[in-house]
Image (cartoon, rainbow, N blue to C red; front, side, top):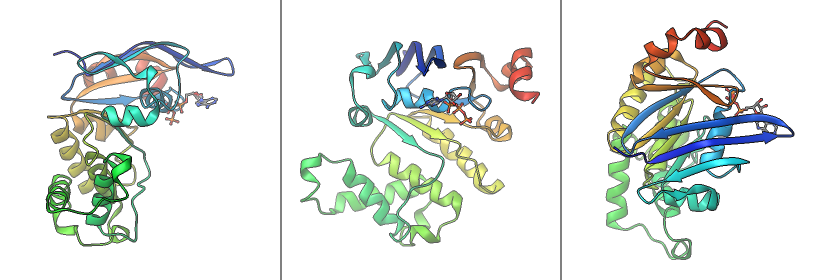
Length: 246
Ligand SMILES: Nc1ncnc2c1ncn2[C@@H]1O[C@H](COP(=O)(O)OP(=O)(O)OP(=O)(O)O)[C@@H](O)[C@H]1O
């Protein structure tokens, strides 16, 4: 299967410091990938490059069947092309219901010129119900987001991301602050999403990564240090030295 996202030989320096160093990475259209690595390895900068927040000094980032260069697009164009990012801290509207949060996310997905005249329609209500069910919040649709548990807020935010119909989801440390039960449900959710989306999960929690049961990319000093199954990368002496043996 050909790649959905192909990053080749990308480098970026900040004031002479190479945060990303000749990094190559690719992911298929229905694939789950964990990205791990020590603090400062370049994980956030890597995602910033994909989403257009940071411009690399060298390399190429190609997207989709027609291998369009993401480097020629701005952040909004990249988001519209189908790349969604979820940051670690949930940013849901606490005073609004789950349904209202999802409705707002659907609305944000519309053509900016149609937003002003936008009204919730039966089809958008239907989509809100589907999205809530998809992220395990069917029973919570009428509750205020502020009343949800931390894990439920994270799922709501994933639902809001899905409202934008992304093909690639970048998810930053989803397990942080979650209970064990929430982590298990999050694993199930991410694995299910990866049946129809590309999903990149940046995560420090190795138990969580093990549960994801997917290919793992280890970053170190802005490059790929190792790639493969978790068992494969955790046996790598360099990975043990720079990351696991800390
Ligand atoms: N805008 C910037 N200006 C200068 N240096 C930066 C900038 N952004 C990142 N860096 C540096 O680049 C390196 C990679 O940072 P990055 O945040 O991508 O790592 P990370 O793997 O996400 O780390 P963590 O796990 O701690 O979040 C770090 O040394 C960081 O200090």
